[in-house]
Length: 122
Image 1 (cartoon, rainbow, N blue to C red):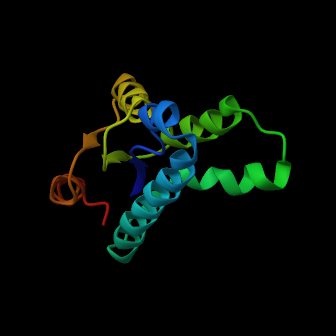
Image 2: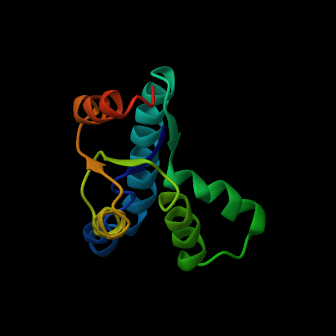
């Protein structure tokens, strides 16, 4: 089962208050997403972490915000479920798009596992 991990990457509040905190928040948030992805992978899921797109952006060197969002949304559209690990403006957009596509959205691992057990994808 392909699982899109949705959550905060950075905070507009921190951008206004302390621009350098955006970088540390981003790293911490991507770390949390990767930790959850690792846990999911060990349980037989195929997770996608949208925050990891920054590595492609580093190689390209000229990406804009829409380049990153475009990749994430394209992967969301082929996922079987969305697991939300924290709230943000971007996560709310991802949830909205998942609902439009009738992709189930879950807010905890037990909820996700109950769903995946019902459809037999594990």
